[in-house]
Image 1 (cartoon, chains in turn orange, blue):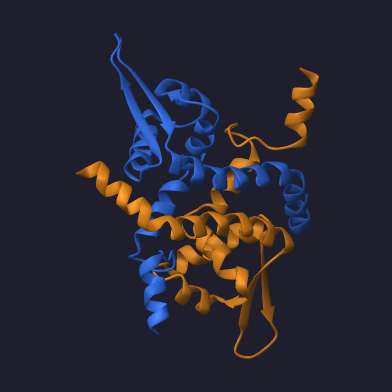
Image 2 (cartoon, chains in turn red, orange):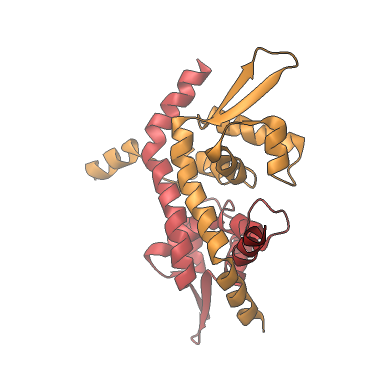
Length: 125
Length: 125
């Protein structure tokens, strides 16, 4: 019993509705959060570059996604003192850690796409 | 150029808005999809068991989530010929593969929760 309690204090539990780990997981796996984290793995990006790379995202949703990831300590926002204003986004060390896992998931899906689609077709026919 | 084309035909690209890999990634990383995939890793579950384990999910959302994961070939739904009716959900081989990646991500967040929260506090103060 006591070991369970200390376990719960030591780490989060995504199955607990009130555990902050659940919100963090949601931010990281949000529709655009996943793509932002993967896009920033290779390099720092300006807002407009991110928007172009992540085709389909609106300005508002990209801003919200970046804010949530910044609040959780995964993304660093840097406003460079130049004219015109120039803001760059990059991953923090924790951001690199979490995005590695996200990329592994996205990579697996990309690689497995042909077999997933084939299985899908088999189920439907 | 031709190698790029064959590369695109061979695997998905989550940065392409029309690539089916993007929808699959969304289903797998949906709010409840993540938790369903992790919950089913250890064992087969009945609908009511899943609902209890994934505290906070509504009946409707859980049903939709399971349907999407079933359509993508990650979850198997088995209706046992007993009275009263009894439906069991389990992971397919592809579901095991994908849920391993999802669990690694969730695990990392659970384990890193203390340091993530500390970083969050530091940013806000």
